[in-house]
Amino acid sequence: MSGYIDRRGDTVIPVGKYWYCESDTIREWGFVWLRPKQRENRYDLCIAIDRKDRKLFNAYWFDNGPDYPSEGLFRIRDDRGRIGYADTTGRIVIRPRFRAAYPFRGGQAEVALRAWEQRDGEYTYWQSDRWFLIDRKGRKIGQE
Image (cartoon, rainbow, N blue to C red; front, side, top):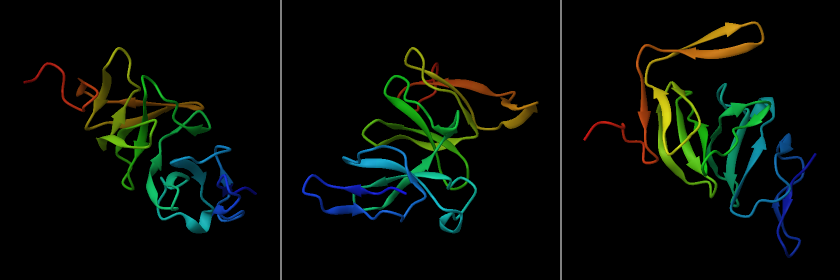
């Protein structure tokens, strides 16, 4: 079990409130894993909370944990499963609206508003006939 204390030793998040605290510190925000009875939807496995224990967003689950930052942004999910992006300060920079979204590379990311998952053994990947690129502000690249 884990929890968080501040520099003065005061409890920020009590030990045992969450199943697991993803990081060893919580400066402004951090990821915590919810217990099954705490989950409100299937995307609530791991959430981001602020220092006041308020939910910020659901983690996008990748490779057995929250998504890795790429170019300072990482993928997040809303309660309906749509994907967006937050920066490393925990601020949502592109609101969740995509059904499929890849990490940023070279200042752009490939996304789709309509997509479905395909399974190949233990691997899952997306299929869509309408992929497009966005910039770091969520604007379609190539449109004015």
